[in-house]
Structure formats: structure tokens, C-alpha cells
Image (cartoon, rainbow, N blue to C red; front, side, top):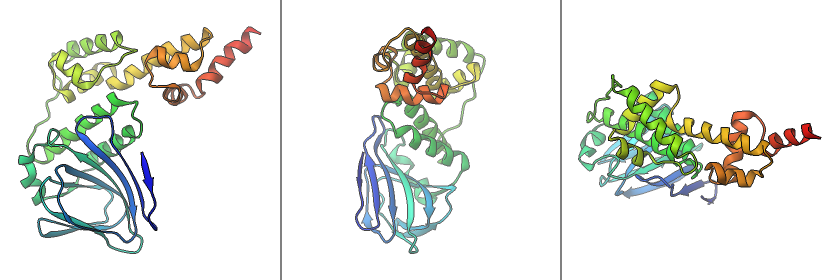
Length: 274
């Protein structure tokens, strides 16, 4: 992740390890104006604070409503500027045309401001998952639901609810996850092996087991880590053994699950032995 502070501006931008997202941008501007330009990607923006004004295909729009999502299509000229001295804070995802086909540009030009609380929450959750490159399955899953919601809003998709086959599909995915606790699995791999649509697969699993696949996999890894830590293994070795990216990845999830970091958890067993 890179950060810069020209004047009163703050910019953080990085390329995530998730196919379909070319860049993540978090920024705060107080007096900036983007010149008229285009992108090869879709720009998906949520506003966290302040107000922004922009023109898309020669039509001006403005918003100070943080509950709205802004969607700008590829190849269509647009600009952007601050509205008041307080400026604005935004988070942007640049999505490839593999995520949203370019043929949907027309509906986006007609209505770039999406008042959709569910979409806004899903985009926020995706940004949170992208903060760490070690949670790829979670980020892929959250991107799949963002994509689905955008397609629904652009009138290009209808959500399919899990039916009778969903229990067996969920069971097969759990078997895959159980077999790949250490190595993990990507959403693309799982959908390819099980011949299932990404969001339908995740919904089926969540309906059957009460939590999404990435959360289930993390829980399995935590269970294995606990046993190894109590057996005297070092946290760094445990992280690699159970499939976490590194010790920091293990520590973040372990502390969230158990309230204490791995080293402290292991120390309780040593103290008891004494």
C-alpha cells in the first residue's frame, strides 16, 4: 500500500490479489478537481464524508449522501471536484469488464447514483476484506455479492435462491474445505469443481451451516492452531502449518476468535504445566 500527502490531500492506493479489481483507492481531498477523463475500468465509489460533484457524459451530478453508491462505466468521460472547504473522503474500486460487461454502460450513464443500502454495505465489507492480502477467499466472496447486486441494479440478473439441491452442494463444498484447510481454495476453483454459480454456492453453504465458506475455513484453521499451540509449537510455525499467510494473519484471526493472541494462549498451557 502506498500513501502520500500533497498539501491537505491523503491518498492510499494498492493492487489487491483479487482478480477483477485492478486497484483500490482510499482518498481525502479538500480542494481537488479531476480533469475530464476516461477509464478502461468501472469506477465503484462510496462516499464516507463530505460532498462531491461530478459530470458523466456531459451531465452533472452531485451527492453528499454517504448511503449512496456511485458507479461510473468504462470509456465514458467524467470529471470530479470538491464542493465545499471540507472536501470529501471516498473509497473506490476499479473493476474490470470481466466483473461487469461494458454493454451495461448505458444504464449506468442514465443512473450513476445508486441509493441501495445493501449494495453500500457489501461494498464497505469488500473494502474491509481487501485491507489484507491474506484473506483472498473472503474478498472473492464479497466481490461476487457486490457484482451480483450491481447486475440486479442494472437489470441484468435475477437472484436465484437455494433449492432442494443446495444441501448436497453445501456438503460437497464443506468436504472441499475440510480437505484443503492448509492450502485453502479460491472461489473460482470451488465453483469450477462443483459447477456452481459463485453466489449460489455461498448462499447454499451459509443456509446449510449458518456461516459463509471463508468463515468456516478460518474456524477450522483456528481449531488446528489451538491444538498445535497447546502442544508447544511456536506461533510462526503454527501459522504456516494450518494455512495462515503469516504469524500476523494467525494473530489477527486468533485474537478475534479467542480474545488473546496465540503466544499468550500457548503460555497458559506452559504456566499450568509448571
